[in-house]
Every structure is written in structure tokens, then in C-alpha cells.
Length: 95
Image 1 (tube, one colour):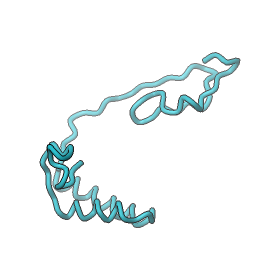
Image 2: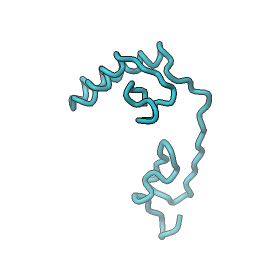
Image 3: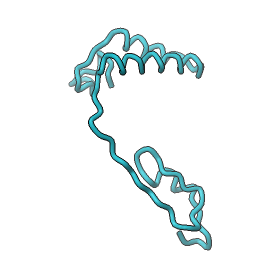
Image 4: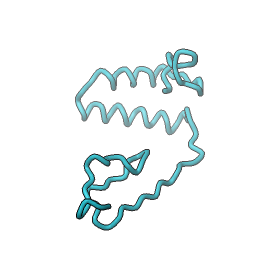
């Protein structure tokens, strides 16, 4: 989202933020499958986010979700409360 080559109309970099160092880290991250190496790259990316402020978070929605007694395997997801609905099961077939 913050890559230099993703400025509209090509992409969704609506902040028009461009940092060649960040682009290089994105390329490195996409080129490796080693979890340890990827984690170190993500740490560097996060440091840039924290020091260069390519975006500002003004608010975050709070999602409150409850499952009825007898519902099993319920896990609220990051964007919806029906994240893993295909894995739910309920006592006596009723939730």
C-alpha cells in the first residue's frame, strides 16, 4: 500500500508516500520464505512506520462478539465475528 509504484491511478497509495528504503524492504520480504528473516524485515518495516509516519491512525472500531452457551469452536476474527463459522458446532444442533 505504501510502495512508490502504487501511487494512483496504478495502485492504492493514496497518501502518495514514497520511501525507496521501504520499497527495498518490501522486495526483500516478498523474496524470502524463511520466517526468521521475514520477521527481521518486518521489524525494520515497522520501525520506518513508527519514525516516518506514512499514515496516522485516528480510531479503531471495537468489535464485541458473544456466543451462546453451547456454541463450540467460536473464534471472532479481525474483521468479522463469523470468522470461522464453518468450524462451529452447537449442543443439540441449536446455538
